[in-house]
Amino acid sequence: MDRALWRSARGPLALATAVALVACGGSTATEPPDVATATPSSTRPAAFASEKPEASPDPNNAPRDLTGTLDPAFLPIEDVQGIALDGATAWVTAIRSETITVFDLAGTRLDRSFEVDGRPHGLAVLDGTLWAVDSGGRSLLRIDPQADLVVAEIKVPAGRVPRAVAAGAGALWLASNGTGEVVRIDPTTNEIVATINGGGINTNRLTDVLFAFDRVWTIDATAGSVLEIDPGSNSVVRTHADLGAVNSTTSSDAAGALRLAADDTVVWVLSEVASGRRATALFSIDPVSGATVKVVELPLGPDPGGLPGLLVDSRGGAWIALDERLVRVALAERRADTVHTDISVHFSTLVELDGRVWFGMASSFDSSISGLYGVQLSRITGS
Image (cartoon, rainbow, N blue to C red; front, top):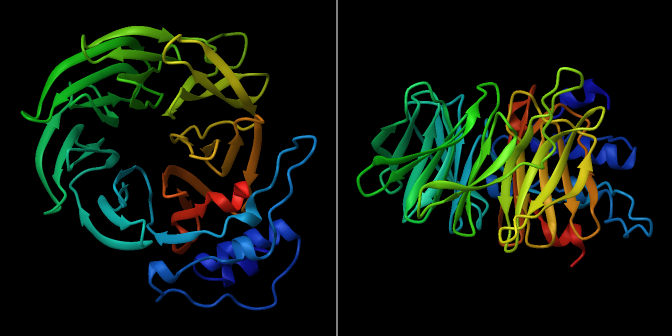
């Protein structure tokens, strides 16, 4: 794409035009309208879908380009880090502005934004209370969502940098970068009541934590494995190690487990794997038997400086955000379909609500197209 043309365009419609050009190989003769004063609900980059109909299923199960099918809604925010849902309300953290922004996803509109003193990352909602990870202050913040105020701060053990939080079994579960350690926080006392350590320490690697199937799941950053924790005993009851991690002096290292998600039947793991090149793979873990299956491998490496996004949607697909790539894996077919933009953007957090998947996207040279983009799954799956 002509960079001069791109720079002359403004707002999220510029991104839509760029994507449409990639999908169709065409050009545009008109300047996109100025949407700087438009409300978020009316700012819809329709050119995502208008230039290219949905492709028919390929008989050879070849990967598809989903770019022309997206038709996204758009909600502006400069720096998406974490996201949590409470009904149709989405809470979104932004590190650079040290803010939490509240969106009404059902109405596709921005509600409000408020500042927090720190570097907010992961989020969780438990019994109507919002909890935010502050990696700068190395703590977990308890926030009153009605007053938009921090009402308590729980410090993590010395030397730890918290990154991710999950809610379940009446508790908060906080994971720190580079460890296999999870601390359990009692929301009635705002105190750490247990520390579960099942892994080594590698401070160069990020982490994740998930509550599913009455278990806490986290990542041992040294081994690249997934640890399964029983909240009844506050102990690691199973380690899932066959996830592609390689630590070798004779071949390229592969970090193993990077990101966790779950649907109604299995836990999903996005891993960096060794295959002669930078690559990632999607694995499933059966929570009953513990069996691990590699579902698909992608010739795309993770962003060394960020945490990939992973979401399993309600229509049999897994969305993977890998820095400048957005991929949807059709799980039944084990087919990886991609979204292309031909511009420098970073994809991040993913969430689903009412048949629409929302993904965070940030541009390195035009903040006006940074925000949450919501796409209708029915347009992609054809049903």
